[in-house]
Length: 71
Image (cartoon, rainbow, N blue to C red; front, side, top):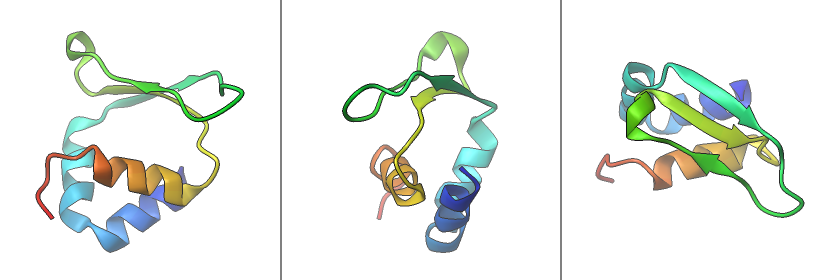
C-alpha cells in the first residue's frame, strides 16, 4: 500500500489530498481466487474495504478511476 500511495502522491497530488481528507480506515478483505474485491458504504463514511491488490499500480489506477476528480 505504501508504494501505491507514493504513486498517487507523485502523479495526482490533488487526488492524494482528497483521499487524505476522506479515508480514515482500510479494512482488509479475503483475496478472491480471481480479480479484486472492494466496497464502501455511506453508513461508514471514510472506510474502504478491499482485498490485497496484485501490485501498487493496480491500487493507484483504481483510486484514480473511482475518483470524482476531473482529469
